[in-house]
Length: 350
Ligand code: GLA
Image 1 (tube, rainbow, N blue to C red):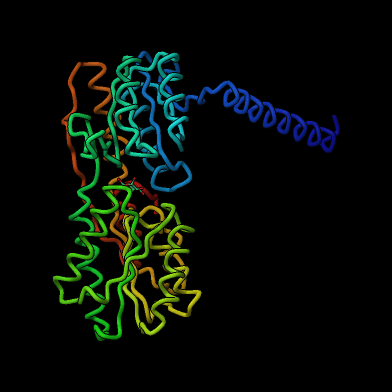
Image 2 (cartoon, rainbow, N blue to C red):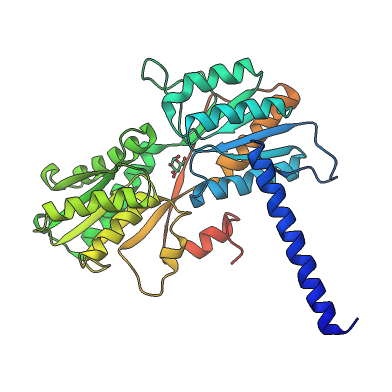
């Protein structure tokens, strides 16, 4: 076959295979079955099957959590089923599907913590073990469901570290308190979010910042557009503020505010912003010209993705239940150290 014809043939074959793969994936999706993403090293179907449901699969934090869960599946030899469950209906359908597919348990970051009792009931009825990750379930009495196994961040402490960093950076720049404002991008519906922003606020107050200059910008949705809109509204109301400090419950909450500030002419010279997650701001830290985004509290995606799966695996295999409440810590990354820290934590090659 002449080489040009062979190239054409190979291209045709590659396209056909790609289309077939897409077709299979959408067929599985239309059947309501999530494609299984990893099996054990032998390639044989693993006896243990674990689901991993996340509320915002597009957020880098959850993608990284999944990546570490996949690593656990490979190391320990179980089948992992990753499911993006963005609302209550999807969560309940996913639990049914997991049970039908022979899973024994699942790890979940629920799209709504108030679904806690419904998820617990469904998991019990389906005989599935359950670990909540990131967002702790809230019971009918509006209190955290402490009898449901949970792994999450030490939210208040991490928020406090954000407040301390902002206060220290402001001091370094010699900004006057009466010319500076604090923008707190809040999402109080979520307990872990509220604890983080309350922690940051507490530390700014302790550093001598007056409560009257700490402004809350409530986000309608927990994402960049939600925070962008909330901050825009605040900036319009507070046009007299010369410099801004910014905190929020995660990187998206802070990045939205940074974009809004930029739109009003506040760059790195007139605003300091500190995020939480450390995973959703890498592009921001890599920008050649520094933006107002000073740094972020890097959380341990490995503990949240790998360790939760390992706990679930041991629970299923050896009957050892995990601790009821595990909390993880954060470490500040900035433009100066993020490459090094990400490398040390196995998040980045270089
Ligand atoms: C919540 C947030 C995520 C991340 C996790 C960490 O779920 O929405 O962005 O901060 O907590 O546990």
